[in-house]
Amino acid sequence: MNRNILLIISSLLFFLFVNSVNAQILSAGFLSQGNYSRIRNIENVRRLAYGVGGFLEIKLKDNWRIAPQIFYNQIGGNIGEVRPDVIPLKLHYIENQYSLSYIFEGNYWHYQVTGAVSAAYLWKAKYDTNPSFDLRWATHDFDVGWLAGFGFRYETGGWKWFSAEFRHYWGRNSVFLDRFGFPVRNSVFSLRLAYTFPLKMR
Image 1 (spheres, helix red, strand yellow):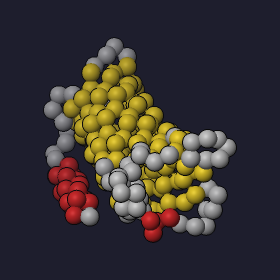
Image 2 (image 1 turned 90 degrees about the vertical axis):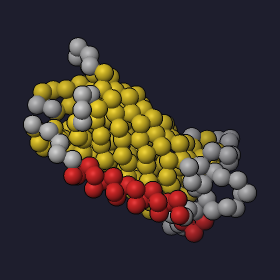
Image 3 (image 1 turned 120 degrees about the vertical axis):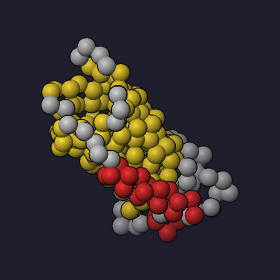
Image 4 (image 1 turned 120 degrees about the horizontal axis):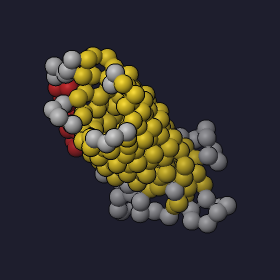
């Protein structure tokens, strides 16, 4: 829990730092993503889910970009290994991410590589077979982790752009409380689509 509190405090301080930056170029945007997730170290197979939210992006020196984000993210896994006997477990998170990206200029499409840290609050944890029963009593309230990604962006002028990015998330907290004797962590592959519009230009 101390690690979670430390990360949340660090995230808030980072957000205050971002807002204090006298950015020459600032944009806001919307994001959506498809998730292909599982829970490591227990018997389950990946399941498809989604996330939606918004973000700010600040242009730093040269080709560096920094982006605080907040969004709803559904992940989890299909508990079991043999269909049709698997049971879908849905984990509903409110997630706060801070990413740092580097842009490689191209003729039309630009390329970007991204690293990010994440702090997420578990809002609901439910099986599809019994949606009225919430498993949060058996789970940790927060997950923290990091991400790496690679993608493409197309700028439409006036610092409006569209991007597509492949990402992978490594969770650091065990999803469930210590009932297994070892950590069981989130693992999520994502395809993210984003679109921005400018808020501040030079």
